[in-house]
Image (cartoon, rainbow, N blue to C red):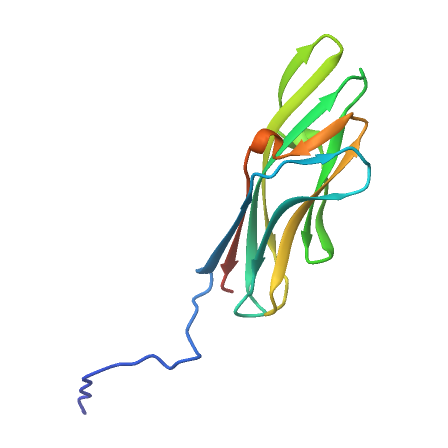
Length: 163
Protein backbone atom coordinates (compact mmCIF):
# COMPACT_ATOMS: atom_id res chain seq x y z
CA UNK A 1 0.00 0.00 0.00
CA UNK A 2 1.27 3.49 -0.90
CA UNK A 3 0.93 6.70 1.05
CA UNK A 4 0.23 10.00 -0.63
CA UNK A 5 1.59 13.16 0.99
CA UNK A 6 0.38 16.58 -0.15
CA UNK A 7 1.76 19.91 1.00
CA UNK A 8 -0.64 22.15 -0.88
CA UNK A 9 -3.88 21.68 -2.85
CA UNK A 10 -4.91 24.24 -5.45
CA UNK A 11 -8.22 24.31 -7.30
CA UNK A 12 -8.25 23.67 -11.01
CA UNK A 13 -9.16 27.14 -12.26
CA UNK A 14 -12.09 27.23 -14.63
CA UNK A 15 -13.74 24.11 -13.30
CA UNK A 16 -15.65 23.33 -10.16
CA UNK A 17 -17.87 20.62 -8.84
CA UNK A 18 -21.48 21.68 -8.27
CA UNK A 19 -23.63 19.30 -6.28
CA UNK A 20 -27.22 19.02 -7.48
CA UNK A 21 -29.64 21.16 -5.49
CA UNK A 22 -27.02 23.62 -4.25
CA UNK A 23 -27.29 27.36 -4.77
CA UNK A 24 -24.62 28.53 -7.20
CA UNK A 25 -25.35 32.28 -7.11
CA UNK A 26 -27.94 34.78 -5.93
CA UNK A 27 -28.88 38.05 -7.65
CA UNK A 28 -31.33 40.67 -6.35
CA UNK A 29 -33.06 43.56 -8.07
CA UNK A 30 -35.04 46.27 -6.30
CA UNK A 31 -36.93 49.41 -7.25
CA UNK A 32 -39.00 51.98 -5.42
CA UNK A 33 -39.71 54.15 -8.47
CA UNK A 34 -43.46 54.63 -8.90
CA UNK A 35 -44.83 53.55 -12.29
CA UNK A 36 -48.43 54.47 -13.14
CA UNK A 37 -50.33 52.32 -15.65
CA UNK A 38 -53.57 53.63 -17.14
CA UNK A 39 -53.51 51.67 -20.42
CA UNK A 40 -54.43 48.05 -21.08
CA UNK A 41 -51.10 47.46 -22.86
CA UNK A 42 -48.26 46.01 -20.79
CA UNK A 43 -45.92 48.49 -19.12
CA UNK A 44 -42.58 47.68 -17.50
CA UNK A 45 -42.79 48.08 -13.72
CA UNK A 46 -39.08 48.84 -13.40
CA UNK A 47 -38.50 45.61 -11.46
CA UNK A 48 -35.69 43.69 -13.15
CA UNK A 49 -32.63 41.54 -12.44
CA UNK A 50 -30.03 39.84 -14.63
CA UNK A 51 -28.32 36.50 -14.02
CA UNK A 52 -25.78 34.51 -16.06
CA UNK A 53 -26.16 30.79 -15.33
CA UNK A 54 -22.96 28.78 -15.07
CA UNK A 55 -24.50 25.70 -16.71
CA UNK A 56 -27.27 25.02 -19.24
CA UNK A 57 -28.72 22.45 -16.84
CA UNK A 58 -29.12 24.95 -13.99
CA UNK A 59 -32.57 26.07 -12.91
CA UNK A 60 -33.37 29.59 -11.78
CA UNK A 61 -35.62 30.10 -8.76
CA UNK A 62 -37.36 33.45 -9.32
CA UNK A 63 -38.92 35.09 -6.24
CA UNK A 64 -40.97 38.27 -6.75
CA UNK A 65 -42.37 40.72 -4.17
CA UNK A 66 -44.26 43.29 -6.27
CA UNK A 67 -45.92 46.36 -4.78
CA UNK A 68 -49.28 47.11 -6.46
CA UNK A 69 -51.88 49.86 -5.89
CA UNK A 70 -55.25 50.16 -7.67
CA UNK A 71 -57.30 53.35 -7.72
CA UNK A 72 -60.81 53.13 -9.17
CA UNK A 73 -63.93 55.28 -9.06
CA UNK A 74 -66.34 52.83 -10.69
CA UNK A 75 -68.42 50.12 -9.06
CA UNK A 76 -67.19 47.44 -11.49
CA UNK A 77 -64.33 44.99 -11.19
CA UNK A 78 -61.03 46.83 -11.17
CA UNK A 79 -57.68 45.18 -11.50
CA UNK A 80 -54.67 44.45 -13.59
CA UNK A 81 -52.48 41.72 -15.00
CA UNK A 82 -48.98 41.25 -13.62
CA UNK A 83 -46.65 39.28 -15.88
CA UNK A 84 -43.13 37.86 -15.52
CA UNK A 85 -40.71 37.74 -18.45
CA UNK A 86 -37.46 35.88 -19.08
CA UNK A 87 -35.90 38.12 -21.72
CA UNK A 88 -38.73 38.43 -24.28
CA UNK A 89 -40.56 35.23 -23.21
CA UNK A 90 -43.57 35.62 -20.92
CA UNK A 91 -43.28 32.86 -18.29
CA UNK A 92 -46.11 33.93 -15.97
CA UNK A 93 -49.19 35.45 -17.55
CA UNK A 94 -51.91 37.53 -15.96
CA UNK A 95 -51.58 36.85 -12.28
CA UNK A 96 -55.13 37.50 -11.10
CA UNK A 97 -56.49 39.24 -8.03
CA UNK A 98 -57.50 35.86 -6.61
CA UNK A 99 -53.77 35.11 -6.24
CA UNK A 100 -53.12 38.34 -4.35
CA UNK A 101 -53.47 39.30 -0.72
CA UNK A 102 -55.49 42.50 -0.89
CA UNK A 103 -56.15 45.18 1.70
CA UNK A 104 -58.97 47.55 0.75
CA UNK A 105 -60.03 50.99 1.86
CA UNK A 106 -63.52 51.94 0.70
CA UNK A 107 -64.70 55.53 0.55
CA UNK A 108 -67.77 56.95 -1.19
CA UNK A 109 -67.24 56.73 -4.93
CA UNK A 110 -63.66 55.54 -4.71
CA UNK A 111 -61.95 52.18 -4.30
CA UNK A 112 -58.31 51.86 -3.28
CA UNK A 113 -56.57 48.51 -3.13
CA UNK A 114 -52.95 48.10 -2.13
CA UNK A 115 -50.92 44.96 -1.57
CA UNK A 116 -47.64 43.16 -2.13
CA UNK A 117 -47.91 40.23 -4.51
CA UNK A 118 -45.44 37.45 -3.67
CA UNK A 119 -44.85 34.52 -5.98
CA UNK A 120 -42.11 32.03 -6.90
CA UNK A 121 -41.36 30.05 -10.03
CA UNK A 122 -38.62 27.53 -10.84
CA UNK A 123 -37.49 28.29 -14.38
CA UNK A 124 -35.30 26.18 -16.69
CA UNK A 125 -33.78 28.65 -19.18
CA UNK A 126 -31.25 26.16 -20.74
CA UNK A 127 -28.69 28.93 -21.24
CA UNK A 128 -25.32 30.23 -20.09
CA UNK A 129 -25.96 33.70 -21.52
CA UNK A 130 -27.07 36.68 -19.43
CA UNK A 131 -30.82 36.43 -18.76
CA UNK A 132 -33.02 39.38 -17.79
CA UNK A 133 -36.10 38.72 -15.64
CA UNK A 134 -38.65 41.54 -15.36
CA UNK A 135 -42.28 42.22 -14.51
CA UNK A 136 -44.89 44.11 -16.54
CA UNK A 137 -48.30 45.40 -15.53
CA UNK A 138 -51.46 45.97 -17.60
CA UNK A 139 -54.56 47.78 -16.41
CA UNK A 140 -58.09 46.54 -16.85
CA UNK A 141 -61.13 48.53 -15.77
CA UNK A 142 -59.42 50.87 -13.28
CA UNK A 143 -58.63 54.57 -13.34
CA UNK A 144 -54.98 53.65 -12.79
CA UNK A 145 -52.71 51.04 -11.26
CA UNK A 146 -49.35 51.85 -9.71
CA UNK A 147 -46.34 49.68 -9.24
CA UNK A 148 -44.30 50.95 -6.26
CA UNK A 149 -47.04 53.43 -5.20
CA UNK A 150 -45.61 56.16 -2.93
CA UNK A 151 -42.15 54.58 -3.33
CA UNK A 152 -43.19 51.26 -1.77
CA UNK A 153 -40.29 48.97 -2.80
CA UNK A 154 -40.55 45.87 -4.99
CA UNK A 155 -37.93 43.09 -5.11
CA UNK A 156 -36.92 40.22 -7.35
CA UNK A 157 -34.46 37.54 -6.25
CA UNK A 158 -32.87 35.08 -8.69
CA UNK A 159 -31.15 31.94 -7.39
CA UNK A 160 -29.23 29.62 -9.70
CA UNK A 161 -29.74 26.01 -8.56
CA UNK A 162 -27.29 23.33 -9.75
CA UNK A 163 -28.79 20.21 -11.29
